Length: 229
Image (cartoon, rainbow, N blue to C red; front, side, top):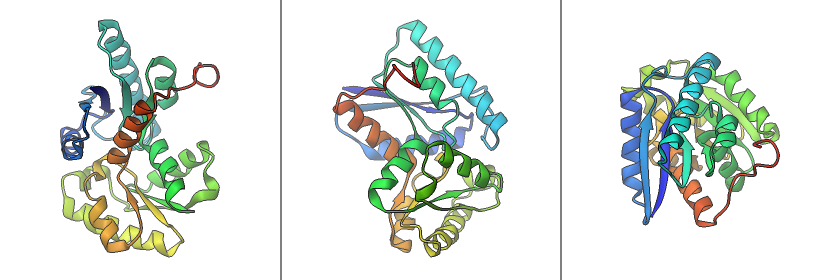
């Protein structure tokens, strides 16, 4: 049986629980997913400082894990900011993917332009910077934000549902053909929004697990002779 380690790089109990619920519903044969959070990281990640602190905790955790001899077949970093992802690819002997890089990659297969649905006002330039870093500026229609802190919707699914629905309609009007839920805390709501908006909605947790599982099935690995050497 393949073993995936899913790391929520923040310390939120609620977000970790929601991620675990999504994992449990997938029920992929011959795949076990272990979900962990970083207890010494910020509760939510909304700035580059947050990303750096959380990413450092993940690096520390993986180094300690390797020292114990515990092994997984793949690692999924479950924050849409992909904090310290390149460093994780450097230190891990197994495939590591981030939910943002994964969601954007899959979006390219489903439509011409995608939009990211994010939370706070600061998330817009941060997401735009991430898209630019991945070389996908020509394929993004927009970044739509709710102008809300993450904590405001993690514990209130009705606020999340209404905010995503309004942002989805705005993104579609700007030419988006695929929508990306831009936070791990938005998991489990994608199917409902897709039914109402009429275009594909990518839940990055679900897509990340399925994609990493496919990478493992194909016996692919991260190249260690260039950027991630």
